Image (cartoon, rainbow, N blue to C red; front, side, top):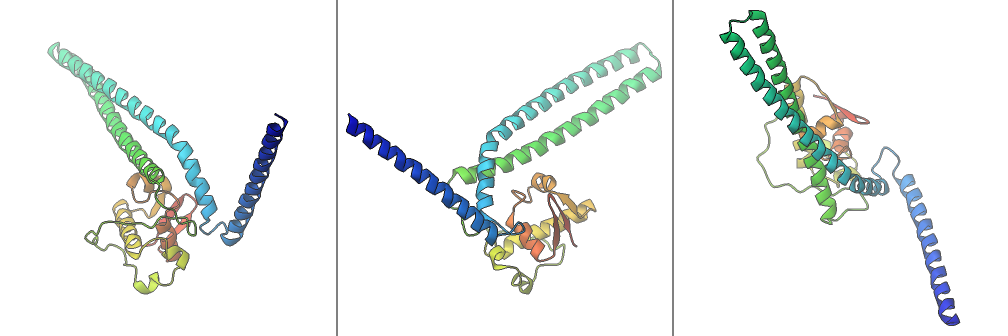
Length: 250
């Protein structure tokens, strides 16, 4: 019995030593990554932490998304019922030869409710887009897709498609060759060119070259604020990065 207790104590002591060694290794790696990759570069250690944080936040975001969609649908149903009620009241008032200003007030209320319903539909669509992008990123994590720890990004692979119509000035191959290799090796020329043309097209349609990260996510242009293609366009001086916003240089 004493021998068993002694053996268990030795095993427990070894586990404690191993845990302490692992913590020292983690701290050493974090310091080395911080020295190798300053805040303006791609830090694999921080990317892994971001992925873990996103994985823990996804269930909450999914629940909140479902709740918002459900509430918006309930509000739309109530608005449709109110519209039907106002329409019936307008018909009754017309048959009773009510005053014109009463009918005008009812019509204005119906118009305001119609506008509110349209805005709610747009909000539901934007929530669905953000939720889809989050679920797609979650599937990439759960699917066990290999992460390159040297670069911290998964190289994009896309089915060949017809090249989009050129809107802004195309990225020259000579320009592409000038960006840092750590960024160029994390994506592809075609992927960056496609994103650049998309940003130019939307900027011209909106008459605005400034985008927030939430707008880019809603448009489906990028999957996250750390999309390596944005860093590539920044290195090419095609865009300027300002924290959670960008400016497109047409």
